[in-house]
Length: 482
Image 1 (cartoon, rainbow, N blue to C red):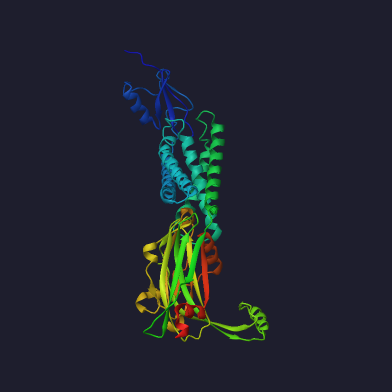
Image 2 (spheres, one colour):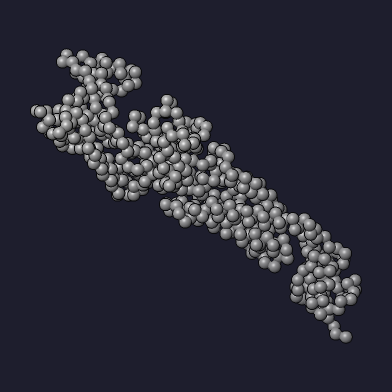
């Protein structure tokens, strides 16, 4: 009969798992008496070994009937922990990947990379859950799970904080709100169990994890709320009249229009609306210089007319209007665009001066990405087939609508806000207008929201104008002597 080493079964830990030592070597752990018998059977002990014989087995912290493992609760905890970690991993990856791979600025790419990295940490924590609530073969598994819970709390708190800024419904709210509650529960459970204690210098690790989570949250918040302004926008716009030419077959004069723009700033832009309009001016004249009183009255009435001593009753009549650049196209840094058109006016025109106004409305590409394919399509307001874009001509006249989805280059804003759209309206009879808001041709939008979004996406308008006397045009063409 061979002599076998003494078997020692340690007291159950907080989960009910009992460590098994044979001789002086730890050979495993068991949740139940059946698991203990299978383990000893693999080690060569007889199947009918007497577990109550103190010469064979030493029981510490209980006897052979002390197996306090609550398998149902433990497995439920594993499922909930893994589900939360995997859901957080998926959410963070979905949020961070577009910025990490496609953002235009370095800060936005860093923000996206941090979210992707946090997703990777939570994926590792999901795997560590199995070991920490299992046999704990790795001393660091509890610390990894704790790190995953802290990262989830930090990122979900940031998302929740950003959502509270405007409290708009977004489908992602159904993800990060429950995950924030889950992270509180997970962190409470892990702190109660002191999951960091099995690693060397647990207090140092815990302090480092908390500091890292706080720094990550601050970094993400800063990169989200900070709007890059280091590269200012600058456009060169020119709108000029060329040398006129008389038409010898018809009583008209051909006036060339020269239009030019260049992106002289440091950021590429989308052109979301633009227009050039030529106006003819009529006025009343007085040699006595008695019109300044009329100018003062115009200021009181907020008409803001030019101040002239000898000229008053200014009236501007649109002669020609069109778009200069296709809405939705972009203008890269240093890119320029020029166009020439010919305008016809009668030799006997009643106008005394002519004025051309060129304006472009742009949106910074480092702030948002416009759905160009959707935005470039012009919707005709008078066409009933346009559906929600239709507007009765008696109410709206004849207008062209450009409308498309815009996504912020920081995806944190996209997931905590309703969808935003760029809307541009052009008409030959009115000045072009635009908006950036949640307006989707369905219901009203608050003015404050529209103003906030215009600033958020860096939208603005640049102007250029030029004025010339009609007598100068007729003189240059030789038509004044005809």
